[in-house]
Image 1 (tube, protein in one colour):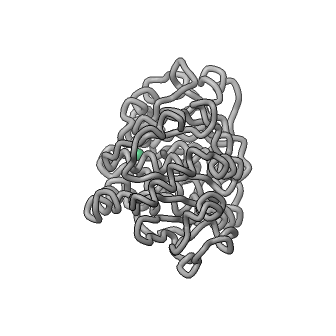
Image 2 (spheres, helix red, strand yellow; image 1 turned 60 degrees about the horizontal axis):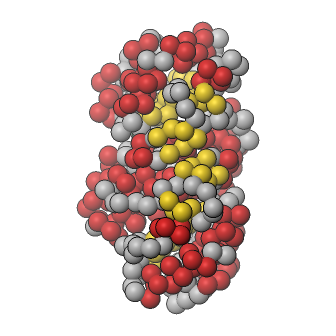
Image 3 (cartoon, chains in turn yellow, green; image 1 turned 180 degrees about the vertical axis):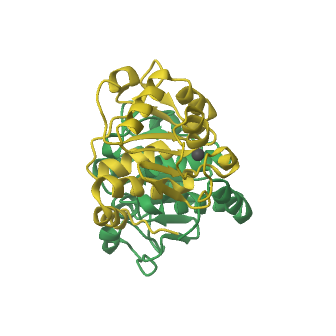
Length: 174
Length: 174
Ligand SMILES: [Cu+]
């Protein structure tokens, strides 16, 4: 669900979104057996640079988080993203299970799914629903995915566009 | 996005959800080119009764709303649902473009995507983000889909379960 919310909101914001599968097939079985079709495999997607890379994994999708964490190609892509000062983000299980083990949270405030916040490098602001620390954007779970997607929209396209988009979607921050 | 949020939330609530396609194929191109795979075609799905039927269509998915409105099988299924006093719901464009033209809002308060609320039978409470009037549950757009899904959860499984589920998803009502 986090994935779809992020993809859909960013496409509404006119971002060119590429949905990449870290598996061998385009069809992805997401959490709760929701089936999605990716645009391309990560092998193909990793050939180009991106303004922003997001890892969406629900707390139920631990298989997904493991697949992310063990994908050398994805981890290298994220490390390159960090080194070149380009934004990257993760939500729910991903900050703790994918970014943290590969040093991608080092020196950064972040948040994650509540039960996993003890694994963060700097959880001092982890109670917030979305945490933006420089180029790192993190968030907590399915119920914060819309705010996360709007924070990414703000990062890419500015605050005014994010507020406008929230309004057209009939979204109100809690 | 509305579809996925509803499917995912209801499966978390332990509902047995069947995702049916009104088209000829299981693969559905939803709004913003998000690709989903349905569990079965509507022809197959229409053979059994359901505790609740939901129509998820985003305001961008007008093709989807037209497809719903012109599916005789779907409309008959909804009419049977209403006649047998079983719950049904719709969000965004669907209340105005699918339920209303087929008399499925008659005598009921409802809401819909803001620009479409002038088409409702009784828009007297349409400013609310979710409207429950007896067996009819309606809501406004992508940004209200989570609240809509939780209102359906409450209808099926009670308020306590809905509140508990919201909490595990880190969702807070605005
Ligand atoms: Cu999650």
